[in-house]
Length: 245
Ligand SMILES: [Zn+2]
Image (cartoon, rainbow, N blue to C red; front, top):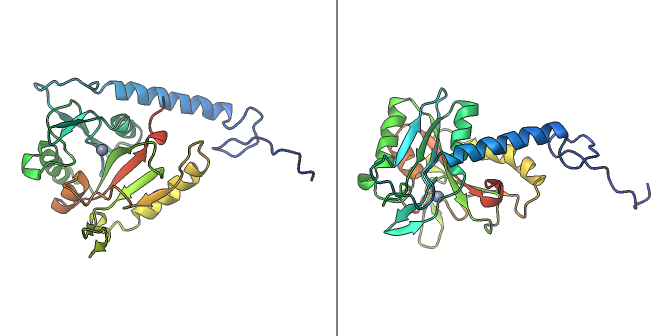
């Protein structure tokens, strides 16, 4: 075949030839519907800069399956008194997953003076309420969603809360947060890497414990999987894969 013939465009989801480009018309409608739903759910959360101290700073949505998705940085938060910006769309994604899968959700809803993914357990109402909820509802797995910046050189990072030495060497148990669910990082990789491979974004890898390992501070993942019967992971989603703007 002459090398000047360029391949016909294929739909990135169903892989059929599609003269209109990289998404079949049907998939385009579905994708746009999902994006509209995500935007509407994200808009339900208090906007950045809103400090409504009289309101509860997080809420639960009860689900039907023994999996809980957590979004502690869905809105702006404060670490050691310094404002940190929200991990945009992590709250919207958690609420969307609740609607389509029936998972339980805990989500931050207004910027108060705390950081649920950092503060010591004794001063951390989010983690205290979550630990109690996990036990009361028989949750088996917790997925704690976060947002990595667009410059991070991966699509998704899995954190399993390993113990590390000062120079970053993992000591002891490599994946303490997984408990008996050892297969989960491989499952996440197997599901997402083929999808990311087709994405129009600079970084496409799924990595584990590279930068945000969930082990170096009092993270939701480390604290809840250490205190309850539930296993879990922290997921850092590159901004290219969570912000539809
Ligand atoms: Zn975060």
